[in-house]
Image (tube, rainbow, N blue to C red):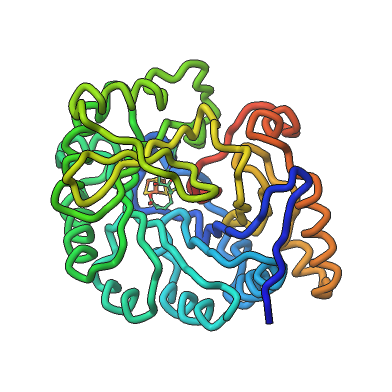
Length: 332
Ligand code: SAM
Ligand code: SF4
């Protein structure tokens, strides 16, 4: 059967779901969570595997074909590999991707390969063990680096996610990008967003996508712009002769909203049609109230028909004006 294509009220296709399978994490990246952690939701408030599979099946029938599992740290969810196996069986979901900090990933890499995982986004903000510990507040660099090496050996496509932070990892930008000389990876340099779980507002961002690009041009004067895939959030560049590329993600400046194709389901089962909204539909409550597929379908379509046109509009529509969430509940 040909999969339908779903469009929102601004004519943008919706075909990509990012699902947070847990809000728990074994790191405390300072841009994501306070040092003492966040108040995790009780386990029974997380969507069950059956609930996840039902929702994914339903959105797939509406036109979603790409799925990303994220968190929190997805490998802290018990039986994650079983969930991936079950989701692989949903034929309309063509690609399953995973975002992880890598700390618990190595033992699962063969199985990820066998399951045909489309790619892994590995979060690595620095190549320096001391700075890694300062940023994540945990001394786990070696495990994340081992995950990188094992993913390379398994030939699983990898994107390295690095949040660019004044005073924290600016000296790592060029070494991270230099990994693309020998490795066919994409290094993604991400503007820091205000989702650190403390509600502090980033009125001014020092390292905007423009400054990041300028920094790259200074180190690599022959840097070349590449074509960006449809709906990409990253703007791609390559150093001629290097095997991989670099993507700059204007996550705070929000330059890419016009082609946004993604929706999110948080660890608590809440639908977000924009990263900057504060949740537009409580899917978990609906599921647990005994909703039929048809009713859930209608509720989802209604939410997709009221998407804000960009992250700035989404912010103005929030019930609570300032962003207070941790990215670990949203999933990034
Ligand atoms: N724990 C996994 C990990 O770190 O890869 C998955 C969840 S994490 C929330 C997903 C992505 O969001 C990571 O690549 C992380 O760097 C990014 N992220 C978290 N907080 C952010 C922030 N305030 N600004 C920009 N990116 C952020
Ligand atoms: Fe955990 Fe990922 Fe947030 Fe870091 S970015 S605290 S690894 S959820």
